[in-house]
Amino acid sequence: MVHLEHVTLHAGATTLVHDVSLEVAAGSWCTIIGPNGAGKTSLVAALAGLRTLTRGTVRVDGQRLDQIRERERARLVAYVPQHPEIPVGMSVQEYVSLGRVAIHGVLRAPSRRDRDAVSDVVERLELGGFRDRDGASLSGGERQRMVLARALAQSTKVVVLDEPITGLDVRHQMEMLEMLKKEVAECGLTVVATLHDLTLAGLFTDRLVLLDRGEVRRDGTAHDVIRSEELAESYGTRLRVVTVDGSDVVVPVRAREDRP
Image (tube, rainbow, N blue to C red; front, top):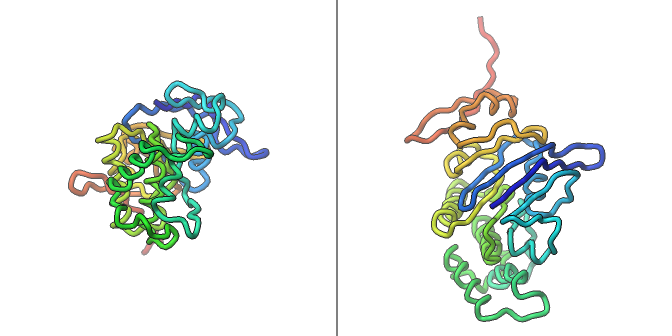
């Protein structure tokens, strides 16, 4: 479904991503992890067709994103940025409906099918009680659900998310990730995301890709990557992985001065 081949990105003389090749299967969830400055945001933006590549290609469903128009790209992949802008005065219903613009175009009114698609995703993400609320007035968890609903309203096969649980408390983090997992399992959605929380990344994801200084250090199952030596090396700190109810939990270990 998603194919990156020798992707390299520069910002001036700085290399953000270097020679990254990945394939993400349809109906799976791949999460990019790595320390700050590793190139995660740049990589997922390129995957969504929002960055010009220095070298390499990105294909979604067999189509090169740099060779199709923006509207065609929006029908293939939806992107959720880390800090989405929520216009003041726009209702939840109106905001989610923006996801259909790629389908019906800017100059055409939404069809019955468009309206039904919006209503369906609003109900799936439990936003029915907020339809007429100003989106900017919602709590953090509600706002994130609304932003995800807009992406799902595009009816794409691939959704790319950059830190979708930033700023949420533990309960809302779990709710958001459970919703995504349900979409993958029940709707065959392909998800590519970045996450800072290593434990949650391992708990919900089919596959982890460890990025460090723009290069892939480790790529494999969540269990394999979480317990790899490269993980602590990339983050530059001591980590301990313990098993709780069958799941890997990553615990940072404080450095202690030697005592006599």
